[in-house]
Every structure is written in C-alpha cells, then in structure tokens.
Length: 88
Image 1 (cartoon, helix red, strand yellow):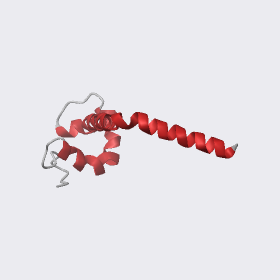
Image 2 (cartoon, helix red, strand yellow; image 1 turned 90 degrees about the horizontal axis):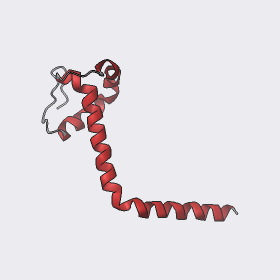
Image 3 (cartoon, one colour; image 1 turned 60 degrees about the vertical axis):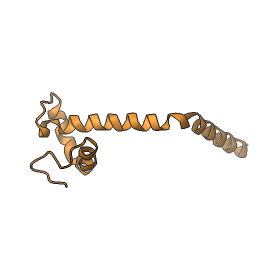
C-alpha cells in the first residue's frame, strides 16, 4: 500500500510539472513584478515618493536592504538612489 501511495504522489507531481511548465516563465515574471512593487512601497519614502503606508513599511527596510542592490539595478538605476546608502 505504501509503494502505491508513493507512486501516486510521484505521478501527481509529474503531472503537475507537465501542466505548469508552459506557465513557469509567466509566473516567475509576475512574481518578480510583485516583488518590485513591494520594494517600491517599502523604499518609497527614502526615494522621496509620498507613501501613505510608509509608517508600516519602515520596519521592513532593514530586512530588505540586502536585496535593494538587485532591485535598483533591475529598475534601471545604475547607482543607489539613496544618499545615505551606497551599495555600488
């Protein structure tokens, strides 16, 4: 019975991979766009953009600072837009 369950789980996993394969790039792109928007919301106040949720996102900045360099490069900014934070 255990072998049958393992085989069924493996077959289910393979079926899900086959079904999701054409959409994998679109899902990754959508996830990256969502992350970019979130990073913009978190760092909007430091970039000089008024942000109504700035008070709530302020405590997330230290957690996301290590991913900030990749984000600003992806947004087309060759150097960090933050005066007090030089990452390049």
